[in-house]
Image 1 (cartoon, rainbow, N blue to C red):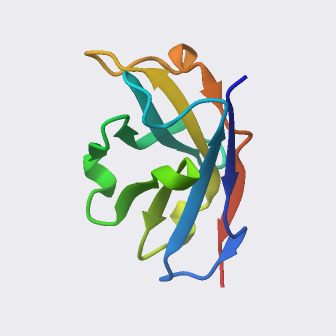
Image 2: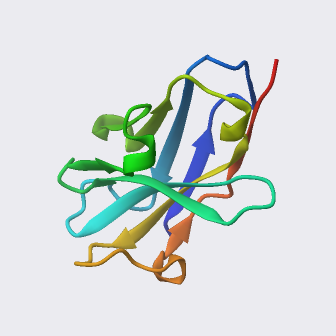
Image 3: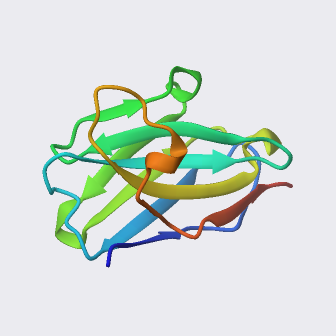
Length: 125
């Protein structure tokens, strides 16, 4: 059984940097043909796809966040991480990590086979 668990601070001050980690068990993040994703949901809004790191280590961040977000991994710990700088209250959201099979298109969220439970991040002074 594959499990994903997000971890990080629940409360962050505006202008600070957020660091979140997704710890994966039951599957190696280097396993071919899988994509590991960060997604968030702000209050009253839908899911927002933030970026991915593939099994080969390649990274893509959505254009809207490209100047502030980065994704990396620690294969020895089977973890991948999200770093988001210059936080504002608009970054307040539940942050999820999730997995899906590699595809030639952006999959629908129902095609993601495993999700973390999500972690609430509040940006407030």
